[in-house]
Length: 294
Image 1 (cartoon, rainbow, N blue to C red):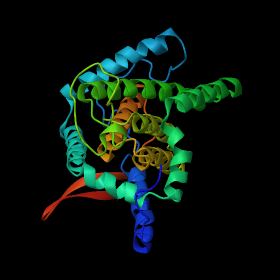
Image 2: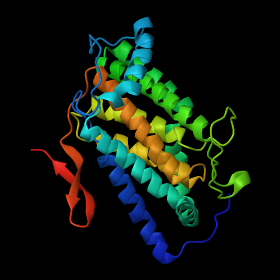
Image 3: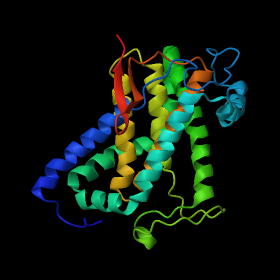
């Protein structure tokens, strides 16, 4: 696909900086949760007893039910996070055309190359076989954490994918480009397989896996940033490739992330992160404060 216009020298400097800021935000905005801290869900009776079998697949139903019912027990913090996701999605969607036009105008060979190599991290046809391979490695090598991560990752991908597809069929949002140009239109509920842009399934999948990996291997300070960087790049690749709007990847990423956190929490949780972003009130509005625990 030819690029709309050649970027100016000033833009060529701005674009990598903007992408770097977005990637950094993706690494920091989703810190691992302490077990049960952010998702007050009833946990399994044997949270650490996770093995492949009939009970594992039955757990999909109980976990899905608990996640759907969890808003009934949310506290102020959970509602604040939910409101923040909705607000950001709404604000971005109100500027959808301008954001998409800027991204496509800024698109170049470098962004296409990054998208080409990171995009598969959000595709189920690559992610699920990789998780199966990780599970096999864990079983053969006796690596319990690898086995557990694979099982939690598979459940997170499947359940978050279900939630994302439910929203897709309720909204039927047009994709950018293709037959509609940059027409941001919504067809509403239906069973058609066309116009399923909102939210992004690739973003959901990439953040579902990244969150599980970050939580399960949170004792290694390098793993969470790398996992979230990969997920952020995979999500951004969908906007770069003109396959999704920016609001699509924001909501898709949030669904994948919070679904995975809830599932990990129900199965015993992972190590707590020392880094977090906390909403803070300031004169003139709200801000996010970066906190580091010592």
